[in-house]
Image (tube, rainbow, N blue to C red; front, side, top):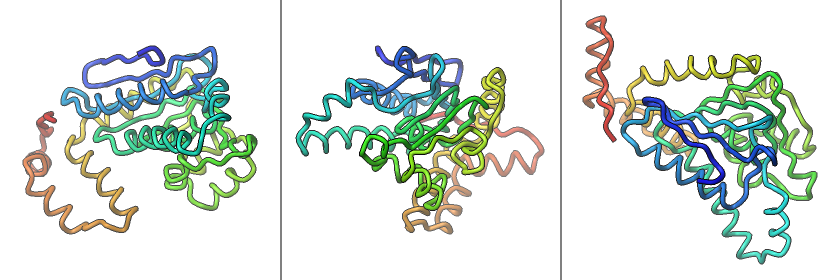
Length: 255
């Protein structure tokens, strides 16, 4: 993979956007690679959590200029195919059965802010900045909008989608786009703290929780069936017994 660095440290998969000279901006190749690696790590039984970050000063500045230049000459059908590939990326991250944590090391603009929204948990450096800047280019943040609105709500989305206004990490925290803000030098430690919690949880319970939230958002959740099913599952039984017996549960980490 030419646009990403991918490494595994025990049960953790770490994906680093690796185009620092253009602020980790994405094009069709990065989109394809990132979609494939998130899907691969998400289906690997040895992986319990995934961290997404960027090399250099930025997390992701959105679409790169060369790719945008190509779009000028695209037909409507070509634009549809392009947008669907981007949608697939965000959906692959959001529906990944593993916890996906964004370590926002710097600027997250446009689609880069969309990547943050698609992740389950986001920790930002206090120097990180954000914007849904598409209107500055005469376009709209359509593909990322479901993931962003889910995190920050329609009111905040309206304010920032229509102005393209930049905002800082503390504002991102207040809006709910990120869950923690720390000094840049403490970013790795903060991520590791979340990973400790994520890796102590039942892997099937994590996947089921994410599925439940998607069904709730779609108005399709059967919460009674969901809890009954997980309680009688091997993982649910082990978790309850371990709690009652005052011991750590032993999770089966299979796919």
